[in-house]
Image (tube, rainbow, N blue to C red; front, side):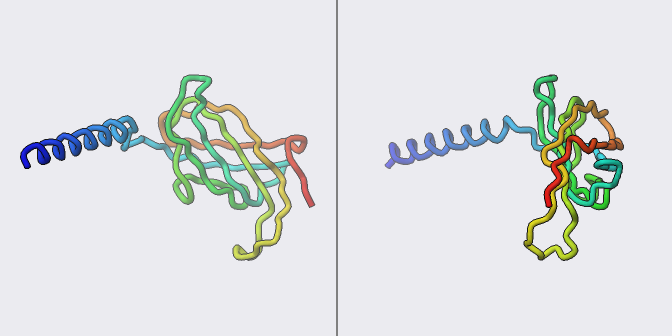
Length: 141
């Protein structure tokens, strides 16, 4: 009985240590900063889409990515998304026409697919505007 209890305690300890090591390697309290701004395509507000802020590992940045919805050319991570961690980032944008009815599943015209640019965000809330030239768009429909 003592041997079984000892083995059980050892097994539980090993599992607890393994879980702590796996979970402990990831920071749980990541400092994120608000990013807001405008997104334009071909000189006009991008009707709808998504903007992503990904740490640029090639320039020594790592951590959690941020994102926000684009609505009528505006985005704000505080309204709909997650903020940026700051530092060297890759900004990616996908944009499309806006659906009149959110439940409508018909295809929408795509304006921009995976446009990207480099940025260097401060370790504070910031405004960032994205201007996508016409030649970088993907016009469908």
